[in-house]
Every structure is written in structure tokens, then in C-alpha cells.
Length: 262
Length: 356
Image (tube, rainbow over all chains, first blue to last red; front, top):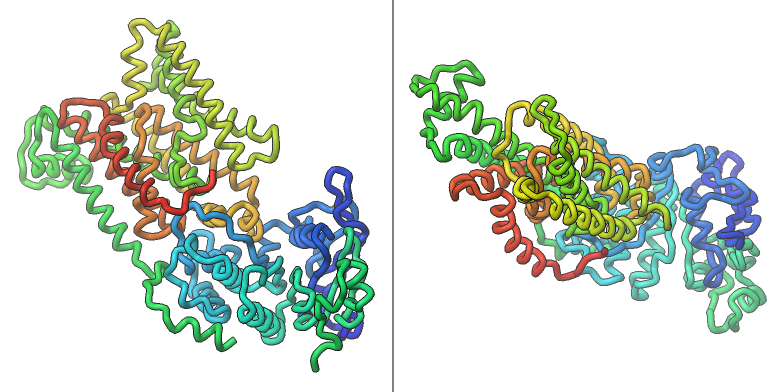
């Protein structure tokens, strides 16, 4: 199902129009149009340097468009302040070296920063969201651990829990499975599908694993050299010819599970 | 999902979000009351703690506790020691809040209130005030206090501006610029000390810090600056918490990174400048107090800031008391003697290293 098949009543969560971003005159993104309806789940794929991360940064207003606009739920992103953006979009962050000992629970609690009371801090609703996110991502066994001592895979799950606790209508992920073993990769994909189905969260994920993208995402957007070259269900967007053309490898190596599973 | 959820079963650690910082705050207040009374009672002329309390109760609340005391004792307590102890309290609290803020914004556990040049700026200002042949006193504030205050703020402003020229005011750039500007100002200080002649002792005593020159008016001027800056920092605890995960993540969590960094650094510098203008340069309290508090309650700024202020106040009053009892040695010496070993122990605990 493509965006066009969805009911017209469904509001646009994100509209990217004619987006061009240039760094020192060199375009990282050229003329990208992307419309995402509320409650969609899409994967962004493409080779290194295709402009995927630039597109994500533009979506959250951290890169200024050279040309074009980004709208969140009908409002131009340059008219929203950081707090308003953080309430609309949660981004799973990278974890830099933490300066102080910080428990996993304290890291997840940071997901509530956009919602907490400026003076009183966390309120019961915030604590419930934190507990819920910890439960859903399954990092309860890590709660009291110092986040600096976690493995890369554990960190990735903890940061996912942070973004889930943020409870924004759009969840953006950049390579959410890169440090995870196969079982956890599948579980994260299932969690994303569950957030999408049960909570109506719009999911936008950058994935390097084309097979994972094709298997778990109904809509695939392919970027190459800063241009959007395909947008549709996996069987259309990730045909054999395109895999060969964009990624420069034999599709048999990628093992895209087409046609999509029933 | 079941495999993920079932992994929770093994959790047995204590939840730090649920800890009771109120108990710690109560403990801190009791501790502060004890050191304040001790600080007012003890000294070259000892006033018994009972009489001290009676004098304080009489003067502050108009209560009569049935004790008798001499006029001299009352003068010592009310005009000499009380402003001194209250100034030490304010300076300790201000430096601790500023230290916690610098550490949080710069994401550097080794940052202290002087990291961006406040100390060298204040020192140079004070030294210049000593060697220029101008003596003005306004409300008990001499040129030394004024130039120390201006020097501290000026140095931070300079560091902040210079660090933005190359890139976009990133933390590493700030720290390195702070170091470079600090070295330059230190050279100026050395030159000023070389030229100061008989004023050398005065400059030196400023560099070591102390509260022997405390007065009610100086206290009344420093207090609102420290209190105001600290309250405004506390009101931005959300931003300070956001910086914990780095600037990019802070932006994703709703923090306007550039603006909040500038405001927080500015407020912390203001508290520092007010503190160093009345007390000189006293090290270690601003570095150590936030770390001790973080060990107890974790890194949440909403808890760290008030508790660090309390601990900083206690440490500074205790250090000043120790300095007086040992025989009017500089407070900076006492805080260094206590603080440096602690700092070393802290470094040994820091296993994962830190990001500059």
C-alpha cells in the first residue's frame, strides 16, 4: 500500500517539498519530495553518502534547507522552536561518552525532558511513560547499571527506550539495529511495528540492511547521490535492477525476501 | 516482544529516580546550621555556643533565651563573625552551583568555576587595582572588588567570543580558548605582581582567598547576585539535563543548544564573579561539591544544583572555621589541602575517562 492509497482523512505527519541542502555549495540533497501520512512506517535506504542522514537532520530542523520546505503536521519547521519539535518528533540519539555516572533509568528518563514540568521535573505521567518504555523495549534488567558500562547493543536498546519514552507522534531512527545481534534486530523491528500498529506512531528509519527493510517496512524510500530515486512498497522500490544499480551488488547477496511475506 | 520483556526479570538494583533527596537536604540543612553556629562561636575569642545562639536569637528574632553576654561578645558575633560566616556560605554555595553548571554544560567532570578564565581575569583585575594609584571606596567596595568582578566576567566574555570565531562555539573550542586566554591573563598577572612592589602582599592575599574582610554590605551585595544567578540556573535544569547526552541529543530533546549554553555559562560566570569579588580565589569547593552530590543522587541537575549549593556552603564555612582556628591561614590553603586528596581519589574512580 502506498501513501496514495490511504484514506484522504489521514493527516500529513511530514511534508518535505523540493528540499535541497548544500554544504559549502556541494549538494547533499537535491530536490527531494517526501510526503508521510500519520501512522505510516517507512524505511530510508541507500548507499553511504546518499544523503539519508542529511534528510533526517533536515526533518528535525537541525539542517537549514538551501531550497525547499519541511512541514510537521502542517506547520513549517522553521516556525517551531526546539521544544515544539521535540514534542512532535522523537529521534533515537547517539550515545556519546557520558561525563558522569548515569544509570540506565536516568538515561531513559531524559526522554521526558520535552514534557516534564520546568520546575518540578518528572510528574506521575512521566514516570509511567518511562516505566512503559523500559518495559516495552525490555531493558528493565539494565535499570541500575551505569550507562557508560553497557555494550554497544545494550546502549542502542536503552536509547531506543529513551525515544519511546518521549512518546512523540513521529519516531525517527538512524541505523537502529547496527550493533544488535540477529534476535534483537528482529525484536526491535517487531517493536517498531507494534508502536506503529498499537500507538499509531509514524516510523521513519534509516536502515543499511535492505533485507530487514524489505521484510518489515511496507514503504521503502531509496536515496542515491542526494536524490530520491524510488518510493513505494518493497517489491517496487527494491527490484533486482535497482539493487544492482544503487548498491552495485548482485541482488542474490542481499537476499531481499521478495515477494513480501504474506 | 516476549523475549525482550522477559529479560526484565533479573532486575534487582535500586531505582535512583525513587531515592529521597529530601532526606539529604534535611541532613544538609542541619549540617549547615551546625557549622554556622560553630563558625560564629569559635575563633580567637570564643563565645560559648549557648551564648552565640542567644545573641543570634535576640538580634534576629527578638527572642530572649535567658542567657547574658557582654557587649564585646555581641559585637564580635554580630558585626564580625556573622557576616563572615554568611559570606563564606554564600560564596561556597555560589561556587558549587557554578561548578555544577560548568561541568554540565561543558560535559567535563574536571571543569570548575574558573575553567573559562574567571579566576585569571579576576586576579588580573585585582592586581591592576592594587598597582594603580587610585583609591576609591563606594559602599565599602574598593577598586579591587570592582576590577576583580569586571575581570572575571570580561575574561569569560572574551573566551566565549574567541571560541566562536573558528567554528560554532563547541565545547572543546571553549575549553582550549579558556586555557589560552587564561595563560595570557596569567602572564599579565605575573607582570603586575612584578611591578607591584609593596602591594605584592595584598595581591597575594587576594589570590589565596579569604573572608577576613567580610562585612554586612559586601555580603548584602554578593548575596542577591549569587542567589539570583543560582535560581535562574535551577529554573533551566531541563537544559542542563539535556546537555548530559551531548549537544545533538539535547537539541532532539527540545533544548535550544546555542542559546541555553550561552545563558547557563553567563549565569554561572556571574555567580563566580560575585563570589571571587568578595572572597578572592578559593579553589576546589566548586569542583568537589557537585561530584560528591552526584555520587549520592545521580546527575539530575534539579537535585544536584540545590544539594551542591548546600554542600558548598557547609564546606566553605567549615574551611573558613578551620583556617581561623589554625591561626588565620588563607582559606584557599585549607580547601586545597582537603580538596586535592579528594580530587585525586575522584580521578582514580574515573574509569571510563572523559571527553574533553
